[in-house]
Image (cartoon, rainbow, N blue to C red; front, side, top):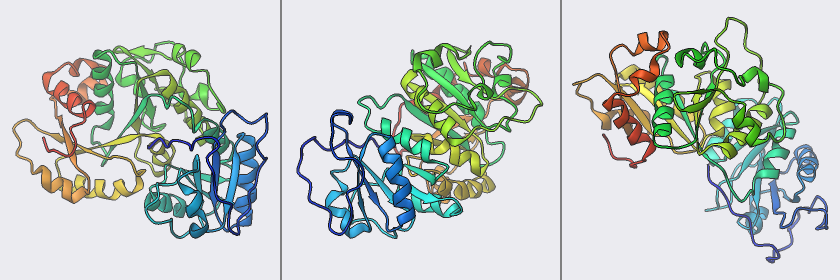
Length: 378
């Protein structure tokens, strides 16, 4: 996710042509240097919703009806919100921060965000509290730690295994690491860590979270395993407690401010991907070196946010693999090899996955992911 810089306070801005400058005028109660938010929409309903949200976030709002009117304000705006009714963006402008739309627009919002390269999606009015919180912290001086998502390109790809080993490796190098279980239907990451008895927060404890979570208290309340902190769904038979987008956003915000690296083990369900993947700065797609897996991954990648999306290919020792063919098939670069370690399935079942992470081949995989090497094939 890109971190946009706000315009300098006091810089001149042209008056909107045909649009309306909504929200409160500059006043003493506004945050010092409060950045202007630009809304591009011709929908009166969306405009009314966003006006209230921006005011609640303590920001100023400039509203215009289309891309042509938005062009003079686009680059100077602190954050750009684009309505779902806007068919195109000004030529060669930075990507919008959020695509905003109304309930009932379904998949179209996420498809539009992916095409535009937007950072986030807000479905109103339900997503109003999240959007207000997002805008209030959008211009924080310290953007916080890096969030790396790990998702399986197909079922059984080994994404959880990869996420655990990456967290273990980063912690071994001295980073403050948090591993988050993003799949409520995955059976509980804590079981793979043999840490179900560890005291600390689990997702049900945070289901009602909203607004800002104290980062120090959050970090201290989490359980530990393998030298890193983790946040898991309980490894129990009970049906998972629903956690909405606002709670996830609040937790990820606290995680960024508490840890240098956040590893997010994303599930494969569409709603889970939308809830968790769009919080990531980078997403690693794990898949075995198989044709069907490449086809499945190619279907998944367009559903992911427009961030860097390298591949980690799971390979048996000694197998010959055409990495360039896999990259072309999926439409993403191969960036690392995940070794297919004998006994990994049994180690996961017995809660000994961390022991397998000490192998040299696993460490090479982790180094390739954590020390990004670009588009070169292994």
